Image 1: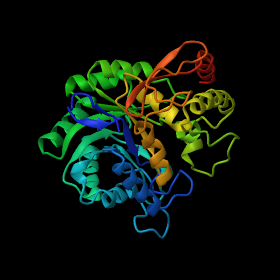
Image 2 (image 1 turned 60 degrees about the vertical axis):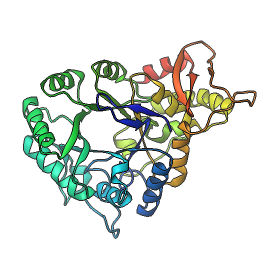
Image 3 (image 1 turned 120 degrees about the vertical axis):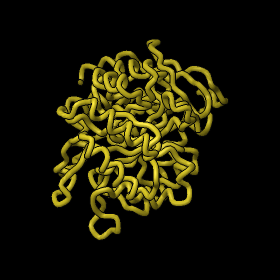
Length: 354
């Protein structure tokens, strides 16, 4: 596993973050708690020491023990029992929902009360007395940033959190809040198929703020698992939150996958590892977030930073993988720097699909 320092924390954290949006059993197809727990175990065994969750992640399956609000956090408490000190634990506040209606009733509030109560409730569900990092999940458009800064400063003073940050905020509001109370991390969507936040990540990274890229596999489309347009059920996040499975984007992404197939074939690796290497190799990204609901998923994702690729001739190589045009993007692959390059025309196609 490869490690980086997250912002100004001084913490050496894995270039891969275990995301838990899908482990609870709601919004991501069929999952089971036993498979999710096994995948978490495997990720930790393979060197991942950064774990990201939120109170609204998962809802569980009816009949399972941890069914309901906070399902992902309660599952994590089980997975981390006896090894809490081995991981950098991240959760969020400011996004809630009506317990009787489920995730579809989600609403945003980043008031001081919501931040304080959200933190305290998460601590109880996670079975810990402190959080390494607490993020405001989404801006609510009404709470003054001064109130957010004061609430976070109070939690730090009380020893309930070590660091704070934001998720899905504009660059302007992030920098304003950072000036009031220096933050240590931001979380934004970023991948080969979602590059709208690239300049924002660069700006914030230059300001000394740690950067976490979620959706690094484009909700699974960058694994190559979807070569024909799928039909997801009602409320599935792959269609309600992400747009990659809608036309004309879906067909254009297929063009990118063909180029990725060439690279993956040349280096004898899965497509997911090409996508993760590209994200983690961007100098303004400290860690890439991926979910894993099965042990096989965990091994494939963590494998992107565990074993050296073979060159096209079959010998070990840490040199460049060059594209047909010459627009190169630095990627980290299996403990060594290699250069993963994709066709300029692919990026033009993706940009035109936005």
